[in-house]
Length: 162
Image 1 (cartoon, one colour):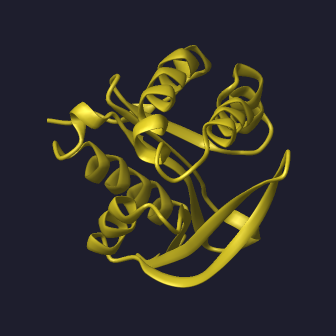
Image 2 (cartoon, one colour; image 1 turned 90 degrees about the vertical axis):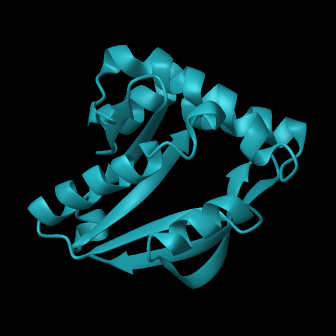
């Protein structure tokens, strides 16, 4: 059985460890090494994670040391939940961790009166796109987001009604 719980500030090292193990496998052939390093520091430094939790309203949930997700209910002051992150260690993929994290987000979203989920996924990350499609997400648009140092996130925006 997969157990999901709210992540606390004390879980930041676990979140970082999962991110630093999954990102090179997930994005190693999609992003350049300099961009990968830049983005990990930008999104997963202790300072950045504290800001996401304490100031930006991101809720983090964690499944032991196997995976985590972050999301934001009522995103943009609308009944939409934005999934910001969902990463599962490669050794734990296919064991229900991703589905359990997703189910938890759906339950939290419905409890807050949200009726739709949205997320961004790298348009070249075919395994993640396939996972989201299997969960019922569909592409609504694509966007290129500048993130600094001349780097861009080239994303597909996907949504699902809940």
